[in-house]
Image 1 (cartoon, rainbow, N blue to C red):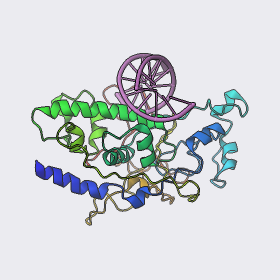
Image 2: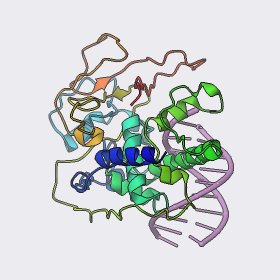
Image 3: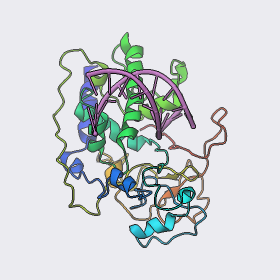
Length: 311
DNA sequence: GGACCAATAT
DNA sequence: TATATTGGTC
């Protein structure tokens, strides 16, 4: 059991965002707040988040990705804002629901791990994650659920000890109430520390200090990874942009950092599904329904998919 | 006033 | 369901 500890720790170290990576606390120039305040409807449109972004207006003809900024606003206007008429809707804008993909979640867990379960609070986590478009509320909500999950894990493994979450693929046992949830959370290792609070010093985490935001400097470099999904269209990105996941060298994955890539990464390999339509705008991959009957899934188009291989 | 957390709503 | 929003509290 100890080994596991070391083992995961080693991996952890690798996977963990190194200072350099986190350094770029590059929140987009426009903080979510500002964005909202100024009616920048989608802070996401700013740059195509390789992850998933809400493709703006379905009806509006395809807009050539030329103007990165303000111009785009105009472009996508005419859609959801229509009702309000005008530029008033600034703060009343509603963001699309955020979809916590395994990658995003991992980032989240990394942040929490670094902070230590004790210091992990929404705001701090959010900052550490430095994901464009991610709000404190998003994190808070997810954190709430995550804590619940941890609690359950504690309870379940309480007696046996040891067997932490681990990617136990089959929740077949039945104990788990939420297979889906478990899977998502299981996609990321849970630091044992989280499961063993009170025991000994639970504070052996590096005080990783969140860099003092470098506000204006990296103007264009942002780790856009927010998985903002559109109610209708869900852009999906595939992990494995180029080399990571199973690198012989053990190169850890930087799902998020890697996201900077802005090259057309058409990765539509959804479970072997052929590239249905390749008319994808130009970059992000887009997945259409694939939610196979999940035992009675209404007719949801949104899919969080991710073959969840094992990782 | 801001942030956190738990509960509740969608 | 998963995520968003709300309300109470510090």
